Image (cartoon, rainbow, N blue to C red):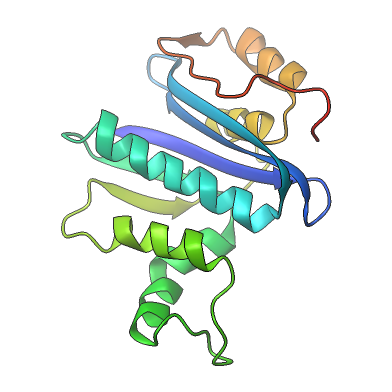
Length: 174
């Protein structure tokens, strides 16, 4: 089983932000894959959704023959995947106030993945900032905190087999 941790962040809402994804194997203490992307203007929910979509793509493309658990500390994302998105799809992408759902394009993209039969992943809620290494690494990537990321790796003697950091840590974001 593969564990994938996701997080999103923005400074201001909207403002500069980022998405972080880390596939972390706690048994071997190894980062199997990581991803970060930074945006000049995003909301926290958009960054969270983009991280989740990336994690699902990673699960489907890299580990299609294995089951993946994707952990998110975003109640918005987890509740959406568990219930809301199915109701929205049945209601023509309208929310309970009969308005188009927020982040419509990202929500529709997410729905394409989670509505497929027999997905190889499950999305679960995790408490943020609770010391879970995978979550802390994803948070460091999402918040563009190179020092925190490197400190976690060094302190925990973490190895990594693939390190795909898209858009290097940038001093002018977050």
